[in-house]
Amino acid sequence: MSGQESRDMFGFRLEKWVLGIDECAFENLRDIGKSKSLRQHLIESVDNWVNKKEPLLTDEFILEICDFIKSENEDLYYRLMNKCALKGITVGEGIFEALGLLTCRTVDEQQCRELRDNFSE
Image (cartoon, helix red, strand yellow):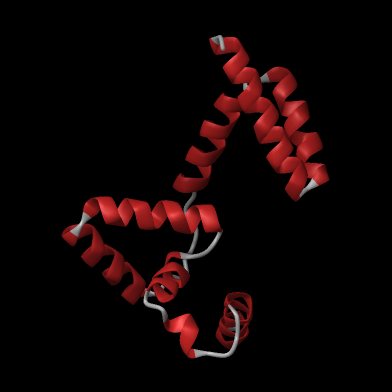
């Protein structure tokens, strides 16, 4: 597969993924793709989002746990981040799941998340 074919396939897969989430966003992304490389747009968008200053309601203890894991085993830390991202869950939820604490309850993972979200409001 040539470099151009690889770029085209990436753009197609990105568009397909976005379409599965939101049709309006898909249309916007297709319009952007007419004037700019989707790869370039993705990198710029993620860079802007990561650098955006906004208040984060972060549990300081989760940060402490992450710092501990990273200091003990950096590879494990990055694998944890990756798996949480792929599952679409927070790092705190991933650590909770890893500890096996979800098995202590009669609610499933989604119900647990909903209960936690309702409690924090």
